[in-house]
Structures are given as C-alpha cells and as structure tokens.
Amino acid sequence: MYGAAQAIAAGVLSGHVGLLVSMEETGYTGGKTHRLTTLLADWNVAKAKRIGASAVKLLLYYRPDLKDIASRQLDLVTKLADQCIEEDIPLLVEPLSYPIETEEHYFQEFAKLKPHLVIETARQVTALPLDVLKAEFPADLNYEKDEGKMAELCQQLNEVSRVPWILLSAGLDFELFSKEVEIACKAGASGFLAGRALWQEAAQIGSRTERMRFMETVSAQRLRQLAEVASAYGTPWFSKLGADKDEFTPITQEWYKSY
Image (cartoon, rainbow, N blue to C red):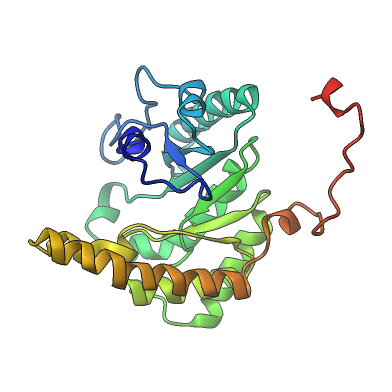
C-alpha cells in the first residue's frame, strides 16, 4: 500500500506493468507468538481497483498448527477473497510462518519445522478462492544444504498448492535468493516477487545520486537475471491451472450475459 498513490501521481509506472496493492495494516495484533493480520482501515478492494490496481495482496502471518489463530486468519482471507470476486480482481496471498515460544530462541528448532509449516500452509490457504500464492521457500538455507532435499520440498509445495505460486525473497541476499528461485521454478513455481534481495544494500548508501545509480545498475541487473531464470524454468500460471497456451475457453458472442 505504501507509495501506491505517490507512484501513480508521479507518473513513474509504465502502462506495460501491473500494480499490486497491499490491503493489510503493517504489523500484527494478538501478540508476537500468536499473530493476527488486520486489514487497513478505510481501505478496500474497490478503492484499490479504482486507483488502477491490477491485483491486491494480503500478507498473512500463519501457523497451521495454531488452529484457532489459523481459522481466524483464513476467515480474513475469505472476507478479502469475496471482495475480489465482487470486483473481478486477482488476489495474491503471502503467508509468513514465524517462531513461537521457545522456537524464538532456538533458530535451528524453527528451521526444522519450516518445511512442514510452509507446505501445510500452502495446502490450507490455497483451498480458498485466491489466485496466486506468494510462498516462502520451504527450507532454511542456513541449515539445509542438500539441494536434492530442497528440490523435493519444493515439489511437495507445488503438489499441494491449488493455484500458481511464486517465491518471496524474505530479505535474503541476492545470491541465496537466486539459488532458491532456480530450485523453486524447476519444481513448479511460476516466478518470484522480490524486494530487499534486489536493493537492500542501497539503503546503506548515504548519497541519493549513488543510491539511484545502484538501483539503476545493480538492482536492475539482478531483476533481469532472476527474470531469465524464471523464464527458463518457471511453470506458466495457466499450465498450473490445467490449460495450454492459446487453448482457453472460447469466447462466445454472448459472453457478457454470464459474465
């Protein structure tokens, strides 16, 4: 959500790119280990569409093993999905796992749980009427070094996801994230959605001129490199839904009557 209106007003968005707009409040309620996402007050899908959004996004803190909290989070997704269906606009959901209680102090313990959490989250969340899953990588590369195991976990994630899925960067450095993108795309991911992996070093550059130069050169090249990987190995979104290119349902002359 931050910066959407400013980007539009400044005219910096090309007409050839989409605009993805967030719907959630920053942060969470309910406590650090039992997190609840809240929709942004005085904001809704209709407003996002009116300013030109191509799709909307919901960041969802999620632990499938916390059944009461998970149920409330799924209710929130359903509420937003209903708005998106009414407005005929795609919904992207970004579930994030997090440590609870003693896991906060033992990172390796949480790392062992992460594959199950990410895969089971994908199973539960994509049972709802969303359009794209923005998934975490189902392993922690600080502890998991076996690329064969990583590929197997990504394949499991692909099998349980009912919708096309893309990979989030989670603030990783670029080299690690590019490795994740290749493994995930080879296993069925349709691409990636990256932020800090592209530009995080720029935040430490004091000079605006140098900072912009970094974004226009290093960050842009990183984006091109990841796009090449996704293009080479990623699964087209329509293939995930069982359609082949140019073989969608034919448009009849009276299509508008049932639209």
